[in-house]
Image 1 (cartoon, rainbow, N blue to C red):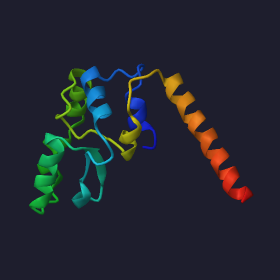
Image 2: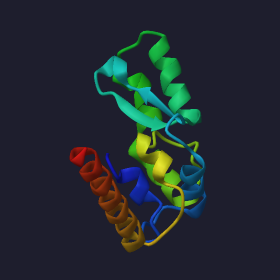
Image 3: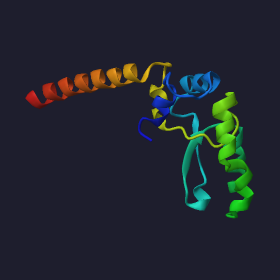
Image 4: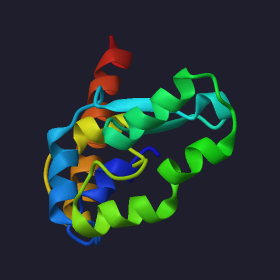
Length: 129
C-alpha cells in the first residue's frame, strides 16, 4: 500500500481514534514482516499478534492452521472497532512515517499535491544545471 496507512488516519475512515493515534505515533520501523514462511509476506504493525505470528514462524511450521487464529480477519476488524491495536495482523506500510495527523482526505491530498509541486521544482532546478 502506497497511501493506505496515510489514508487510514483520515477523518473519514471509520477506524477507532485510538488505533489512528497509534499509527500517528508509529514510524517506518514499527513494522514486522510476517508470514514469510507461507510465501505470503505481510508488513504488519509491530504488535502482540504480529510478534506471536513471528514466534510461530520461528518454530519452522508451515501449517496454516497454526497461524489461522492469529491472522483471522475478525481480529483486525476488532482492532479497527475498539482501538486495541494489539489485536490482529494490521497492515501498515512504511508510509506510516507520513501519517502524522488525523486530517480530512482533502487536506491529505492537498498536502501530497503541494509536496509533488515542490519536488517538481527541485527537479527542474537540477535539470537546469
